[in-house]
Length: 220
Image (tube, rainbow, N blue to C red; front, side, top):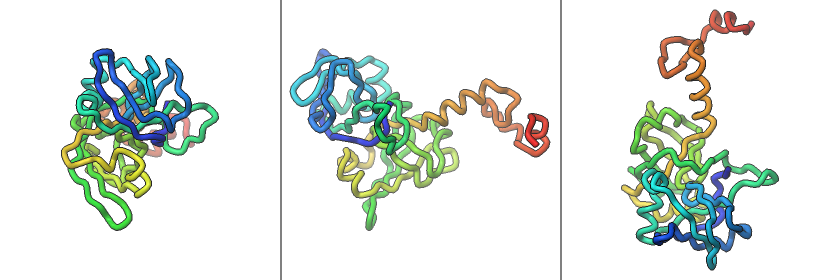
């Protein structure tokens, strides 16, 4: 598990044996088998190298995320070691399991922040997005400032510290980013889908919560 608070910015390169990630010196000492979020993707340290590590990657990881394309050009990535139980949870719970990709559709400098607008490449994931919800973008814990009704396009107000301390400063309109929706939203949907007598179950939207419904289910 991770928090979405980036602790270092490094670079990723592709090798026949996997991916090489460098720029890890600001992180706590790493060991083989440790988990590290690289642009929001949970990777396992397979081998330690100077100032970084080598990681094995599956076809699933390369297809679902932007890591393969970034590695081909030695791109900049955000780095965060796995959360320890004694650590402070300053962002939100991030699993490092990317749901899908997004595309930057607008990027503007404001007086005290940056306006960043992103659309899901698979709009179906927009159902997990709502105003003031948490979302991980390239491994960064961010707050949704607003979104269209179905959540398929949303925007974020990025503060100066986040902008200068992460890979966001290198983004351009049209860039592809890794997105992970709020873990709690996905689990809630799964639980509701298994309880067909609950309102809104299975995305049917055919039943609303009412005082009668609450009374019939033990609420008074």
